[in-house]
Length: 365
Ligand code: IPM
Ligand code: MN
Image (cartoon, rainbow, N blue to C red; front, side):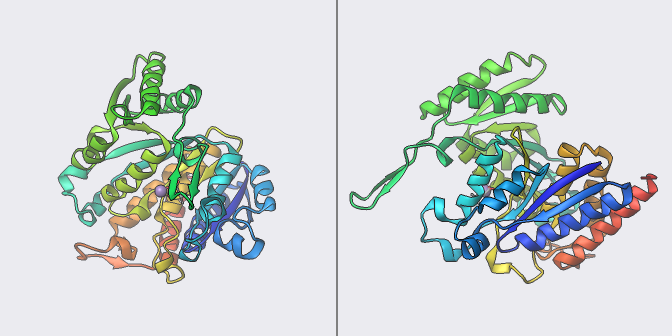
């Protein structure tokens, strides 16, 4: 298997966590005799400083020439005064748009060992397995017109969707639900917003193509509560860009840390992979970052782009095993510390690598 992966580590803890994810991928390649080629390019704040733009042309060219892009995180407080498109985040949105992936898959599954780390009760969250499908190229993030008029003291954004944009992401959600527990929950604000009424009508229409999948609709405010009250009731959750951004950070409460959440964006020219967490400038460079979200993201590359299902499963089970053995990064070591060993970012990466190696060698791969 040949795979060209562009690594855009970005800012803050981005380089630390992607470094561990890449090391795991290299281990998998070495064990299986695969040829994974890695290239590195700048994005975000580091690119603003070095190249004067958050998404340099050569980063974009390299991305478009790759099979997959693994992105760390972007952002930093020193850029807060800049307008949105000039900020590090502008680079991320620009690469998302250029690669064209519209369906951002954000799985949220609870590890038994981490339930004590959540403020929610273990019996509420244990066994949670939600797949958020966040529309990634529409809504208020990209809608025009948009403006902050400093003279008049007014600002606005446009939350806009075309029917076809809703239909294509809904289809991805239904297809994925078919391979899971056959339930889709569509989240909107159709009691207030026209754009949500279009969303709901379109998802309802698409659902007719999938008679074997159950569809329910929820308002986003209620859903924000339901995912914490009864997370196990949800299978695939499909929603628009901004609602999906908010709900998936919230889902980090279920996993015990935002640092556990991976993501993959599909449907475009090149698949884009990024952990859900941000650049966490306060802990950058200290070895405190949790690399598991990035490592699980690497696992999604193996499943979705490389089609190496067994290797992808080995990463997930290695993470489980390492947690079972009591290894934690600092963010996971709140709560009960009995039998817990706190590891640095690199030590955690090494533990997972070791375990992946054991698992794949045992399986004769
Ligand atoms: C995310 C992030 C991004 C988003 C930011 C950094 C632009 O919060 O991936 O969830 O809002 O999509
Ligand atoms: Mn977010």
